[in-house]
Image 1 (cartoon, rainbow, N blue to C red):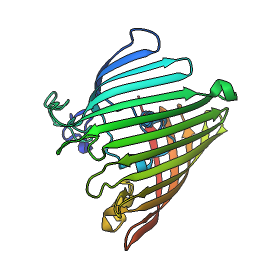
Image 2: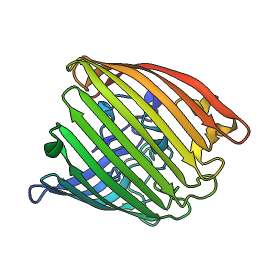
Image 3: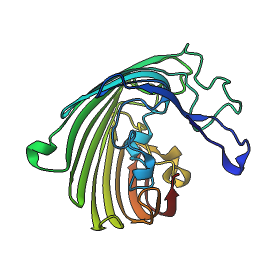
Image 4: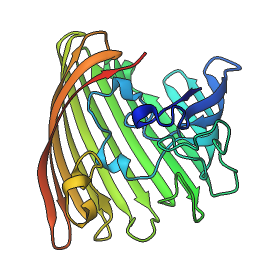
Length: 288
């Protein structure tokens, strides 16, 4: 279990982030119950943010309305194969805005919409002689209801991921499709391609990323909250998105303490206007 505060530590307790029990009855099988991450997007979402080489998750993932939910999930791994299934409550309060009092609605009332997930993956590492070569497909279907707090924007979300690593080089390709959205959340498709290379092993890493998204509707693509939507006109919405990111990581104590710097160019096209600009970022990421 872990919880968060907020800016200025006011309140000091501002909601649960994760709170779950995990049972592993046999090798390869795990059952998880509680507030946890829905099982989709194994790299951009399920991977810890501490180990992410970019400041932000991809634009396409960030607009899908996925967040931690009260859930019951089952995962099974056998050899190179991976399988998952889960059921989630859509009325779980977001981890980015708690109730301010422990146990007061932290897990929701379980009377909103319900979502279900299925997924499967296979690691081709042995076949192609790499350290890792995981191909995975995941799907979440949401029986949405008005007022849902998570998983409430699309009826169906699909993700496809391929992560291949060999020595100092790694390549991640992850794609998403959201269908059955309401209002401005029209059907949307997007992906990102992210290569990285260790210039100095365990010390200095170079990373790049190209992102793309396109929607059926004129306002179905949402720019990044940090910081594109803060400076864009028309609410930072459009129908197509392109971005290029380049950056460095310097590891002081692995992913637990590192310096990061990067620059991202993004172009968001709308009906009559568009955003075209750069975001420069630098910072320290630490975890303990």
